[in-house]
Image 1: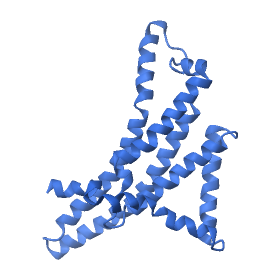
Image 2: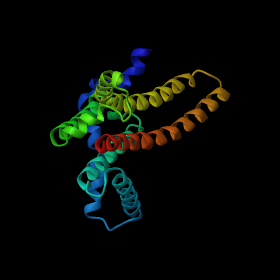
Image 3: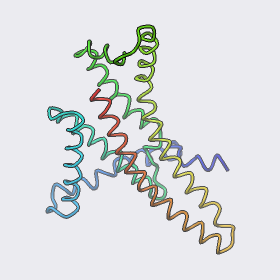
Image 4: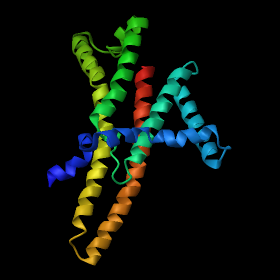
Length: 219
């Protein structure tokens, strides 16, 4: 049973169709080049402008390129989270190969840029203000470890949250088929609530990933 349960998150079961599911957002983006402005486009523009203003508060007004990068990352994760909620479609963001590929290169680029361009500030950041002298070596070690595990925690958080909701939906779906009509109704109601919760998690996890990446860049 456990093998069948976790096979949903195995991309090798149908390799081509599973990874090609990440390209489905392009089907929605192409329409913006030839359709007249619609309410959906106005809503998307207002959301993107709000995200840009919020990222500018964290990064400053001179970080337009970084804002575009993290907002594009937010849209990519959001679309993949939503697409994964449809039946028989692999959730790419539930696999560590995707989440690590998103987090590690961006985090490494920020770290390399900080140490190359602002070496003194990066060194000073390893020791918090007001740290006693005997604790400074330990604080440097702790800060280095915390910086190194940032992309891992960022990737595992996204993948684990996407996997957890899918597992709950799968487990509830397996329980309702062999029970009475009343228990089946309760299971279906619980699945609807969980599905609504999964839509919320899809948005929240995309926003959290974007915000944490922006905070790492601002440091």
